[in-house]
Length: 293
Ligand code: AMP
Image (cartoon, rainbow, N blue to C red; front, side, top):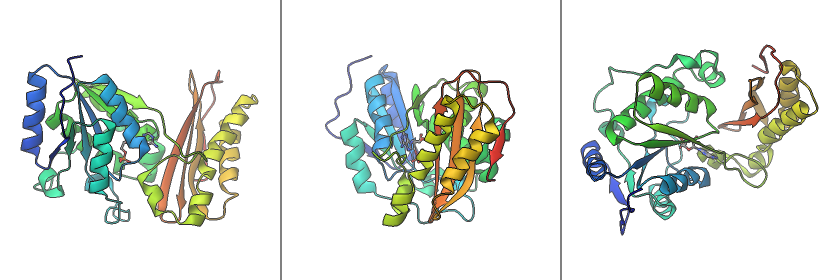
């Protein structure tokens, strides 16, 4: 790595041209760039990505953009939490050198005619539950790659299907980007940190860790030797069902060669929350079954 650029302050950019020119300069000086795309309302999960990027790259560029393309018509685009001042100091303290916060008009000055679609999502749970969401993610990530020219890009394991989509993008469209997946940061009671946790009332916040407890129950089931995904999925959905204020979207156990992956999504009040856990076990070749859809 080249010696880190010593910025006294993180640079804030609102325009595509300004941000691109700044990062062109960094790349021309031979510095590696780590990109951390976010929708803001930064929490420790996001900041763990920034810290990791700061360790591994010469320059860290964090982006904050609540991307309308990835929200469905009945979703929370308008009320999505926003806290630019808090985000600014948190990103800087975590080691970000640039913060790109474009307006919607700056990112999409006209109705976009080019969209990116990724077909790896055909059997995806989020893909089925939120039509168009992952294509919206693929489109904005493509655009961010094009204007940042990152060497590495950091994404959270919590959004597992999103990670798969980004990996497919990079492979199939030959982006010169290394995708780095980062572990899920949780509250002490297991709830995965999420900007949408801000929607939870005190009672809902108390109920929400049932998602993680369901994943743990699925894990325990696998560790006890169970290999039927229907049974494991049912154990998880039954556990979510013990919280009357939590409405299950899906609970699914998927076998893999090296590890099983457990997925859960649920509505808690107005918040739609997702979580996932990888369980390394010697999996039997069995079919996938979803409970609760
Ligand atoms: P978002 O702002 O929700 O679009 O998230 C931006 C990035 O942060 C995505 O790559 C997420 O997967 C990641 N992320 C969100 N929550 C967490 C968390 N609790 N732990 C680690 N990464 C996270």
